[in-house]
Image (tube, rainbow, N blue to C red):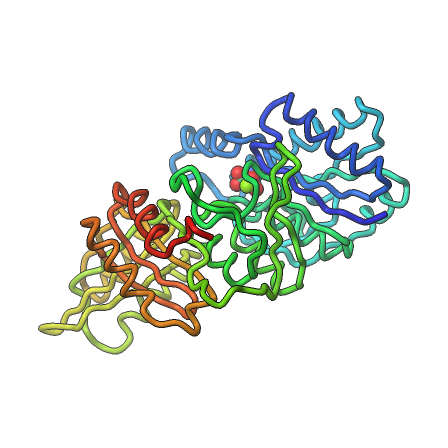
Length: 404
Ligand code: ASP
Ligand code: MG
């Protein structure tokens, strides 16, 4: 008997038949004598629909009301999943984030989990019930409903696995695991048997779309080993953990493309101490996530700052910069037609020439590099969005990931 936390994503619970399929999978694990806490997302597309509806009634909706609204997507699927389990003779109970004891800070739409009071969970596990928990939501200490940021059901699952000291944490999705690239774009992408938190983190944050970044950070911090696998078959998935044994010659593990980024150029600002600080303070105060910052060499007393932000935060970024630019001069322009391509691998720590190989391959394909940034285990470039898929295929081939 093991204690297992499972998480089923939006596609896995996308319609009535799929919810029944999930219920049958849960039943198999339960009949084998395991204790189960199951996290589900909203049906695929529901969260997006709710956001669209919110924007239709008000282009700039209150974040508190947004969380009130978005939390209902998961509340539908927990109840339906519990009902489906009852239908196949499994004792089950659904819980909202609040009922499961998940407390968060007060940052609406991207709240952080502060703690989990596992009392109710332990009580119902002891009573032999399968518990179905709504992903992506929690409650702050004043009783307000909060959500954990897009893709936040992953975080719910990892945090619950830590809180109930699960023996296993299984993240069920619509792909067989973590691939060397998005298999929908790069046809010969290969599934990885294992990957380290560091690499997974880079791939998740770079738009490999497999998991929410914060959930992987949380797993690394609390050392939660988890497996990413498909809810549509029984193939083994990818194990994500601290240390992974690698073959020496593997330098790059994966290629990721993020098309949900925008490039912000702040031009003609005063080239003097404190300008950049004012710009990024304003963005930080508005909770805008900034990435890939480049400042050019100042000329004639003015300088340009270029950086990327998530597409969803570009309006907020622009709004928060308006008062600063009034004070220090300058203009702001936003370019949405960009994408970020990255190659990732812990092998880069000990190998040279990775950048040259990547830039060479992209140049041969006629792909222009707008911004470049590097870290110990990754190289990222900003390129035109309409060239992003081609760039992923070119990079994948350049590092021979098809031959893994
Ligand atoms: N339903 C939420 C979203 O679409 C949370 C999740 O699916 O993990 O972002
Ligand atoms: Mg998801």
